[in-house]
Length: 176
Image (cartoon, rainbow, N blue to C red; front, side):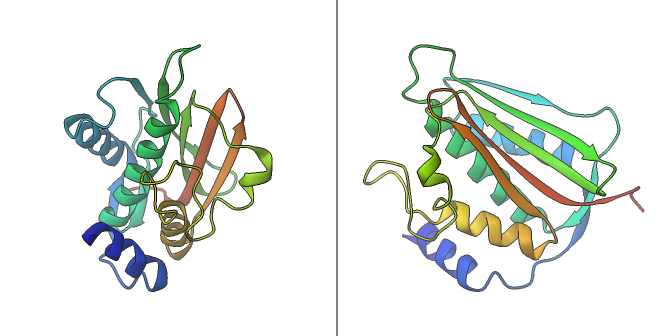
């Protein structure tokens, strides 16, 4: 209930958070370790591809962690029923120098999202998960967090092959 309440509050009024400079590589490593410890990604292959150089952004660490935890948890849920191919989640960080954004792509080999549902997945209360498994608030909250930080979220999906969610945040050239 407490998590549900926080999601509702974040959706309606995300509020101010402390902004800090952070290297997305460190945030990804920490979030993936947290999910592994919690058992959410324990039984599937999770890989991370990160650049050699830091990928600096200025944002709320807690909110960006919330974005990443939500996207990777969703990916883990999506691969749960997969039996005909390896259950995998891949997180890839990269810089889009042309647009000035730091990007994080979370891909899964899961069930995929039907095309007719893709336009609805960011609406509050909409969920593709079975009853009792999802509130339909995760993706709308994630999108709101990213928009408030000057970023965005996009999705690509193919039924039977998986999905990829990519979030972008304004990149910083260096720390300090």
